[in-house]
Structures are given as structure tokens and as C-alpha cells.
Image (cartoon, rainbow, N blue to C red):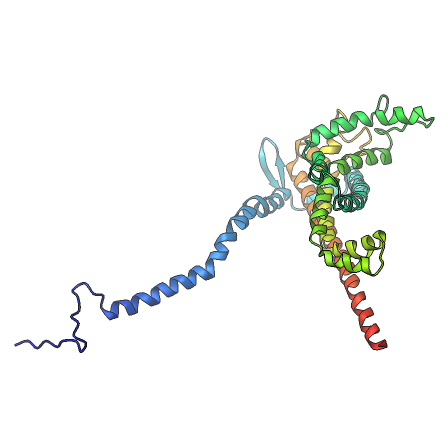
Length: 342
């Protein structure tokens, strides 16, 4: 006889019921899977950016360093190992220092006015204007225009003989300016092209930051009797410090890599007869695809430009961050002093 024990509650277990042992082993496996999903899914979501940056950013930088240590021909490919000879040859070339001077001159003439005008333009766009969308989209039109088209148009405007600017100067009795002959004049003309293209783009960035400022701060300033100028200088500009840091760093990176505007400033594309406006990227292009066709030296220039951008970017970040921190520390010190007086 086989003994059969009925459940105490009178129920009969079904034939397809899952044994308790199976559920006890399956539940921890599901828990581990859910924990792994919670832990690793954020990294999977952001991994496409880092994979793309590795392929298109870090790998070309490392490979450029490898190329700079060889005599690399455009047609023959990799040649003999030369070590740092490409760097020493570039640093001994006077054209490199001309290009470095021109790059910094155009960068300063374009970045500083561009930053000031962009903030003022964003402040105007943030006011109660009619057809706000039209004006805000209008300032972005120069950025949409192709750089080559902008360069060709401004090259005609700043032409030495029949340019619009020289015609206006001669009409009012002033002498014509050699925009393609003088060093400073050519830099001003190219910087004007850069400002025309990028001022509206940066103005929209500042406009977005201004719209994020709480309106209660402006209302409190109005109640305290602050004028519009005081509200702009003591409320708007201090609240824009993080955005100013971002725009300064991005303008530095882009300004030191300027190529399209000076390349198309004249028909030769060589940077002037005496290399008056030849930038570092133009010098890099000449070494790599010019008569020399030396990719090793061109890669050395690329790495020197990369180091310059990193150093200037870090200096800009440190200076602007220090200004921002000091600007934020002063009001706290004043409040503490006021509380002690009370």
C-alpha cells in the first residue's frame, strides 16, 4: 500500500504546478538580471557617443602623432622614421611663426567683438519686440550661409580697387585701404567675415541663457530702483557667467582653426603675397597638399596646433572660472558684513 497524504486545507495540487524549489532558483536569477540592467543600461545608452568619439576623435589624433614621426609622402606613403625632425623643421621655419601671428591676430579681432555684440544682441532679442520669432531666426541666417559664399562676397566688398568699402571711403574724402596688402587691414577684413557668420549663433546661445534667468530677480531689482543699465550689468551679465565660459572656450577652439575665410579671401588661396593672412591651418594644408607633399610635417603642425588649443583653452577656462567664482564670492562677503553690522 502506498501512503497518500492530503493537504491540510483539502486542496489537491495540480499536475502542472511548479515545484517550490524551481521558483526559489528562478527568482534570484531574475533579480540579478534586473540589477545588471539597472547598473549597465546607462552606460549602454551613452556608449554610442564614446565609440564615435574614439573612432573619429582619439584615433585620428593618435595616428597623426604616428605620421608626424615619419617622412610620409602623399603618394608613396610611409617612409623612414625621422623622430622629432618634423617638429624641429617646422619650428625652424619662419612661415610657421607668420602663420601663428596671423592666427592669433585674427582670433583676437574676431572673438572679443563677437562676444560683446552677441551679448548685446541677445539682450535686445530678449526684450518685448514685435515678431520675436522673425528677428530671432533672422540673426541665424548668416550662420546658415556657406562659408565659401560669405568669403567670396566679403572679398568683393573689401577689394582694393573696386570694393564697396573703399568706394565709400573715397566718397567721403578718406584714402583707400589696401585690404589685401596691409597685414592689419587683411586681418580686420577676415575677422569681419567671422563675426558676420558667428555672432548670431552665439547670440541665440546667450538668449537661451537669458530666458533661463528667473524673472523674480529682475522684479526685485526694479523694486529696488535699478535702472535698465544696472539690471543688465549687475543681474544679466553675472548670471551669464557659465554661458560666457562655454562660448569663450568654443570660440577659442574654432577661432584657432580658422581656414575657410582666409583661404577664400583672394583667388590664389595662399594667404597673400607675403603670407599676410596665412593661418596655421592654411600652413598645414600647404605642407600636406602643396608642392612639398610632406604629411609628416603637416601632422607635426597639426599636433602643435592641438597643443596650442589645449593650453589656451585651459587658460581661458581657469581665468573665466576664477572670475566667476570671485564674482559669486563678493555678494556673500557683503551679506556677511551687513549681518555683522546689524
